[in-house]
Length: 406
Image (cartoon, rainbow, N blue to C red; front, side, top):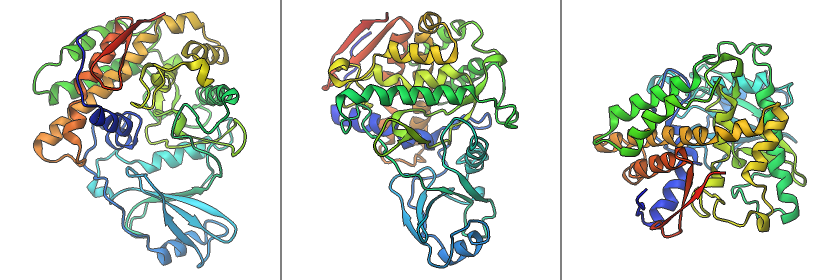
């Protein structure tokens, strides 16, 4: 595969913000009704109407009174969030970014977030306890829900520099444990039969993102064309079967986990916007992409000395998950290139869509042109993995080093 030349500054900003950042959560929905949502901008939300909010919350959430204070939280551009302070207690309010009439039907579906958090409340998956959902936009102008504030630590750098080296692996394996716990949840018993389709997960999504790519490309992208041919014929045996269907988070990574303040214990899994019913290994492989990415870009560690950092190997991480789920580790690793390539194929199709919006002048992000330019490199990474290799760019972005998949 030919080297991909890209200025490091552009590459760093786009990838850290896009692949593992909030823009992806703003632009895609795993709901079957939506391919790409760019109708809502990442604008700052209006200040909360606190008197109206208190009037609505007080009878529903114990502890809320006229002394309630609100503080806008950083980030949360897809679904703006506020920290609510009461007397000795705090909550988080998550709202839609605009009235429902201004959004695509399945976009920014806080109702789905509320539903899945409520369903998981008494399972082995740690989630914040939700308190109230308001779909009546006349209350404060947008729909919203309120959940308990959870105290803990969020690690923005997945190499965990704040944690002693000898303790870092324990955090990874705790994340692994919680992901397996999520995938073992009996979603039928929780009444989530209508939360997503139960079968042909990969076939459906390959077809969906192929359509997205073809509808938005300006010229064929060789690596995407190769993946379009390769992916359907390499879906692992049983990969489309309903028997493997589980609750998938859709954006499971270290940054979306809140850990206990002092020990390797996940106290809350956050950001459920992309949650649906799907295949468990799509979640696992998404969470493993950092093992294939270089430092500084995507906050990866694929080119780092894992032992020196105290991080587990990817194979150990996969093997731990497989053991928890009763899977054959070698069978999972045999098909691992498919799962990784699938995630990168999906991302490249999304980037193509952003490019179309930029050309039409309707893109909501000021760096849309730079973001869209990443579509081909991402597809090339996916195709390299499909061929049994993974590529790691240098910090300058001018060279690539290929490693055989073992």
